[in-house]
Length: 267
Length: 328
Image: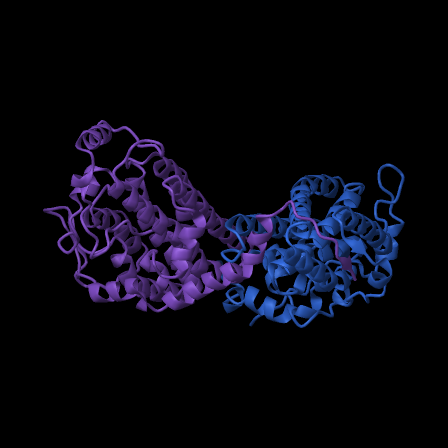
């Protein structure tokens, strides 16, 4: 009989890490779908590298959750959990769409992850602290890659500029959903880092930091941003509570198709 | 990975006779001494033409080859397999990039090569025109097709054209990791549950004929390749490579208690040669001429990818232009 991985880690830190891990797993899974289909070979390769890092980061957090928080082993946690127990956000769940959409998402997403890792590197737990520092070194290349392409295509041809702007508009409400508040968030807010300051600023503060940086970048690339119109866009929420967009269930069905043939078998 | 380098039926023996005899003699003497030919060196037109065709086919095989395995990245069971398969297929795309660059040194652009792939003018390895139906197909492709490709590529890496040889040396190094990845998946399934083992046996049965086709038709049926072998464009005959492959890998398959769907398959200890039932070569020619199970699908996917990416490539070619359009 198939059993689902229901041994959930409890406590706010475990939940926060699970959210990051689920985001990275699903984002990496989506980015890997570009393999063989990119607009140029170099981008197939780049998206695959980013995807491998992301799935690798997810694994690192699931391993931490197993060792330190009593979670199941990473394969069970990732490949044998029902949809309503996944905590990823709606942005990462979306299909790859066209290259403009995937690039705009990659840019929004990796800058958000950069901010999360920056804050996580101030955590008192030395294992997590050094993990965050290590992973930050990889995300640096992701944001560099995303920024380079965003700039090139926003300043490329009129068509590429229009396509990118339309993709940014499409991505924006989903990107805001990355910062959905979650149960237990307030408990983490009061946790002090080794320097005597709270290490986790909370989702609202992360969102402000992210948005300020994103808007500054867009202006630097010559995009005339209508902040009023952007601020009226409603964030896509629900992921952090286990309510997902219609795209997650088919993704999980596909991702676990072989694993579910026999979850106890070794593959 | 790659299979090919075979001279297509209908190809003519290169006409070395039309070249300047003095230059041709110097060229052939250099190759005989084991020197490499570099892009700016003099070379016979037929040498250039055959190398472009061969390297281009190889590059196409890498990008088309990423499709059947690529569809399993999203279904790979567990982190170890998922991460390894992502890295493996990424390598294959990287090989295409290396090979297109090597072919470009001979004067044909990447765009022209990819256009010729899409319009069906240039070929790629037949083996990628078959479907990868189950996870066990990933094991068979990763272990046996990659192994066959290594036999072919190690031979070609000792050829005469410098840029191709250097690309192949790097490719072979990476392929040896792919072989380990494929072998690991293969052994895990072979020694797993009865469901896993059945899955593997069925995949092996499906892939045996394409694997036997991999090195191309028997030397008895092939075109004359003396000049290409003298010029070190082709390094070993189809039969020699097929025998090498059988000798290295059939025992490994049998050791795992799996069978191969050819009752005649055995090694003749007196000659050291493997005996086997000739695969159906009509099927081989049918597939190479576009009528295999997945030819249309593979080219259609590649075509859509090219068309959908056209605006990106167009934008890159004029990165100095600036436009201001309001957002939101």
